[in-house]
Amino acid sequence: MTNQLHFGIQAPQQHISYQQLLEIWSEADREPLIDHMWLFDHFMPLGGNPDGPCFESWTMLAALAAKTERVRIGHMVTGNTYRHPAILARQAVTVDHISRGRLNFGIGAAWHEQEHQGYGLTFPSAAERVRRLDEACQVIQLLWTQTNPSFDGHYYQLQQAHSEPKPQQKPFPPLMIAAGGDQMLRVVARHANMWCSTSQTAEDFREKSARLTQHCETIGRDPSTIERLASFLISPADTTFRQARETAQNFIEAGATHIVLNIAAFYHQEGVIPRLLHEVIKPLKQSDAQKDE
Image (cartoon, rainbow, N blue to C red):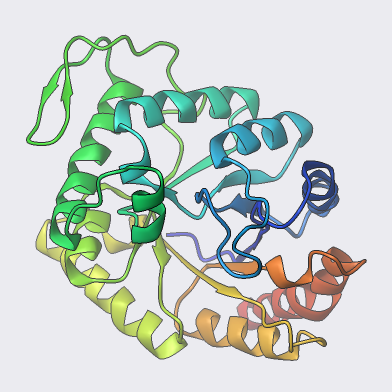
């Protein structure tokens, strides 16, 4: 696990036009201190006007991949139950090539019951969704690494599935799994390169990170091979970003090496990217550098 501190921004595709979103992503792409940018994977808004606009995420990510040059890109996170994992694997490979190898592949078990009901999608129990995710990770990695693989799982099957081209990144894009519960953390230990924490506090992050380490050790995996990411929504009341800076610092002290700031509440304020750099990212980067001296 890298000790270097990385910062990202989640700018989801809701309550905003494509052109406005592209401007935010393009501005972040020009700032070297911003390492990654993220969408979410939902078909309806989370917060705000429930009847407001919300674009499909993989189509949008492909468009943003074509329009950016440097920053790593991904979803925080794509819902496994929204698409068959074989189709999802092929979508991810396409975006990895469009972006010239900049995709971080984030996935989770999915949680939004209303969204599933609205679109006629099956919403299994929480336990089944965890099992489906574990199986989906196997399917996806097979398609990314093998030629015409077959798979006979309980939920998913492949029969000599065409699997070309392979991802541009070798052996495949970093696989990040969002997890909070103990069974999900076991899935992270088995499959992930990155853990996307669902913790709302640094104390909970520290506890879940320790559990993840235990699960890795149980299966003989080096825990340091999984990077630890914390993300949070910046409150609209936090107009100076002071609370965001303190929250990020707490997560860093708890062991996070990636911090992602969700700026959905600040879409319509000019200069949000430069302000985040000046008020949050640069001070924390400088503090981290001084600690290593």
